[in-house]
Image (cartoon, rainbow, N blue to C red; front, top):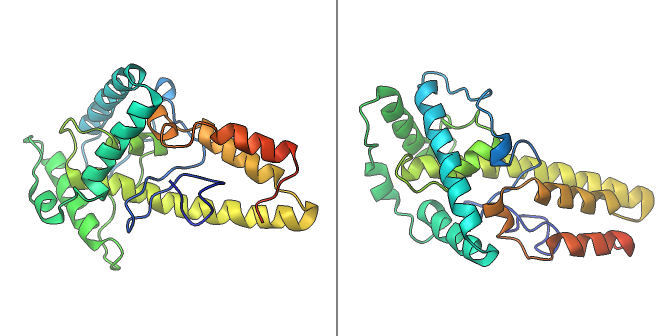
Length: 226
């Protein structure tokens, strides 16, 4: 998916208005490197959140190897549409209540709904998933087990979108400076490749299969973005 840059150059993003997916610079994207050390959500129960994320890792690791790239891309689209596409029903999502008696998780779900409703309107409600890593956000987004409400998954997606917007502005500015200085964009294309390689399988599957090969070709043949 693309945002702002160019579908043929950096195909990965998530605009709330067009319900596309977001992607980000590398951090701790693979399940094998998943850590809970930086999970911090204020008053929300860390123990419950850690347990949910650990279960999400297990589900992702079970799902992804069992599917082809095309199947995984299709699955991602179906899952994403639940919280950002045509299937998203804001009124129905606002009525969802987690199947739990944990007051912290109930509060988190309520906050996620308030955030989703306020998003883009200058509201003061904070995102309950703001401090999760990019990989943790992806786990929440694509987990349809019922551990997270629809608006919690949407809140995770919106956080990814905001981070991508900041990242894309930075990388394009660097690409412009690189082009002015050298007439080339080797570093920019390499940044795109590194970015792609850091994504989990469910996100990589949504890119063209030749995404990396094409950018390597552009580097080797002195192509530019501008």
